[in-house]
Length: 300
View 1 (cartoon, one colour):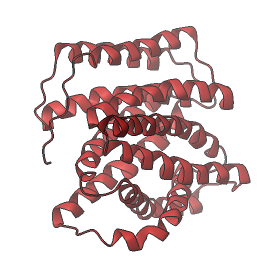
View 2 (cartoon, one colour):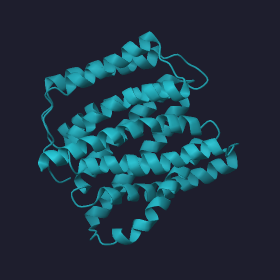
View 3 (cartoon, helix red, strand yellow):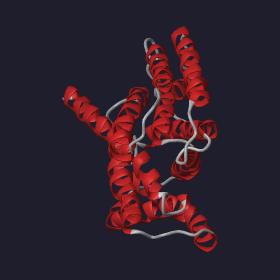
View 4 (cartoon, helix red, strand yellow):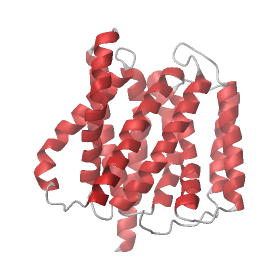
């Protein structure tokens, strides 16, 4: 029975990573005509509308003060701070490079586990982290500027900040998943994001020239319905079947999926030097994961 559940978790997380990889392409495409926060607001609105039908079922939960605090912390990490950083990142860097930066999440997650969960940090983790960071710096320095990526170094740094937020989200979601369903956790993220980004949407509506084209709105709705509903739903579901450390490792698939999709849909290409730097990041991540211990279950 356990093997079946692990297989279900494995399939869920792989599909979640593919969907998340497509979010870089969708967000980049939508921001051609719309402001970054307008895109996120439409995304949260579309996702929230999908969850309205489930509100009655969510009321069955018995919420403690601690639960409410952690749920708010979950939403604060992601979507609030995470999307603030990622939306800005994609203004300055390409979808391909932003996707590569996501491969650092397993390292950051492992480091956070060492601090918060008292997990032993191995030499392989430290060595792999150094290699991966060298790759990130190399990728950012060597990145060529373009109309769609005017400041890759700044954009990559902002995406790195987004990964720190994603780490906090993963640790909190892993704990909450023991009591709350994946559907509920995904829904509460959408509702919190809708409220949080509403003022940003109003501000852009009055200060920025935007074209509410069918293509841009379609990409934004795709982000809300497919990426938020299906992507986060599958991710949160996988956290109920797999340990957080294992789930974090699958983030390494995002750069690969993103490179393929960015090439096919956006026509983005990396130079040979950027490809070598990207490979360096992945090598560092793989080395770091060789002997990382499993997360010890412990209440936050």
